[in-house]
Length: 124
Image (cartoon, rainbow, N blue to C red; front, side, top):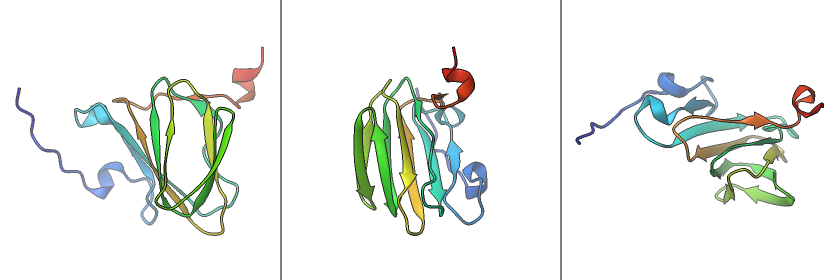
């Protein structure tokens, strides 16, 4: 089986003209990895408490963040890499000051996420 190279431009994945923000679904290019580029300049802001049925690798490109992965809290800064194991809830937030940029690698051909702090999901 022969596969061809894929070349994407920024407009193929980016959701912001200035910041590294956007999603590249692996299934769209024929691979088993999805990449999310996250960026925020707001201190205290980040992805909410959620879980995936696959591993996620976080690469902190710029700034500082507080990660909560299960019961563990970790501070990470530019150049550090963390693993969020499958089925373990996690979140992170910008510790500031300034820009936080991460590249989040989802070991899946598509982004599958269950938000856990949504009142409609947690109410029973």
